[in-house]
Image (cartoon, rainbow over all chains, first blue to last red; front, side):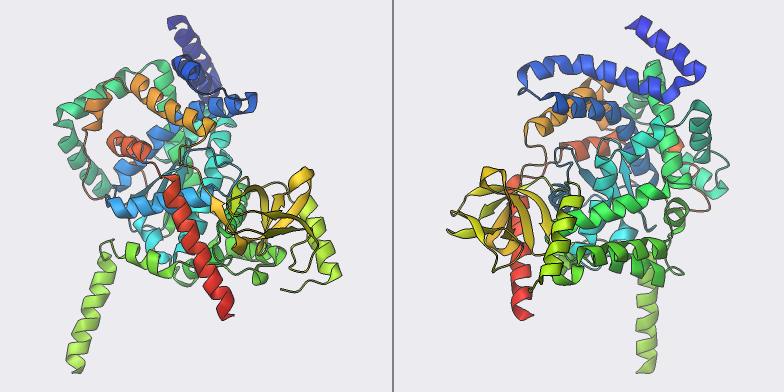
Length: 339
Length: 176
């Protein structure tokens, strides 16, 4: 194993960074998984191949998801997170990647965005959930993210990058921090570093093998793509198209994603969509392409569900947004003045 | 829903051109559910399904499922006459193996995972400012990720949601 790690180090140093990391992950996981497969049901060759792909993604995706949750914060409401997982898994089961895992969590951020990490970790912001008006729109958003996961868009992009590109992508999310952000992050790190558990975690991250470090490098590059550079726009359009198809197959209103994107266009000036716009095609362009698909699908002949009440009951579990609170207060004051 | 010959031809062409997207199965809600040669009420019936009989779906076509009928033929069944069969979010042999890979990968790569899990970063998330510089430099919140991995959605819940969705479609169709 040591020899293998050393070889991986040299390969990584020579510029085979992610490919080597992935090969190593597959090796490591493959060895660890052998005992499991002995007791697990027999898998076909195709299933074995898919399992191998999944194992290679797992460590990178887990690391990326962990960093996104640490960065944005999580919103821990069990019924709401359970609901996101229910709708997301229902929709994803209508696609060709039903065997994958889809693990969904709400992020405590007003920025409008959603992220799909390798391995099936899907993170949706409160800002995005606030802009949806019904379950059909949520289903389309989660369909889009599950299409990214199933098609391995992020993983394939990382694998296509050489060391230089990976470094550039990683730097995109680590350079020149905003001073106020830096101060807040320092406070947060101090808090976490006080705990014994954090020390254990730091030891794990610091002492991991070369493969582990490469995984971290790949995860950082992945975050750079997610938050700064974005995936190829072609992949975003593909995820939109597939997301709509999965949601329609699940019985939802075909026009849901188009309506959601239309709302983002209309509210562009008041919403925090900076990262979304930096990393995705413009919402108007996405909407136009979705609308083309709807014509092709003859969407006007399809009756779909919207799930308005179920969604509203869950949406109410989120705290009122700060801006919304201010607007509400202002409206109340004006109403009192009016009286 | 009315189809003329031309639209049926177009649908037929689309059906052959579109790659397989859906890979699920549906269950007949009652005895005598017809599987027809085309997505049309009046089309010839190739097979009838008994209540509870499960049939594999190929894709959704308007208000019909394109299904694999008996004898390897393609047929169409109304989405209102069947209910969607779901699997647990980690059900099935590959999905089960994937779940095992999640658990075993966790125990091997995060040796002291129980302690690592105790790392709490439960403070409110930072709002994005001018850049997202610190995202890649944060310590991963593995506790939250492990909780995501532990969460599973039972098939019965998915099927119940599907029933609610198709009940709403039935109501909407009636009111049209």
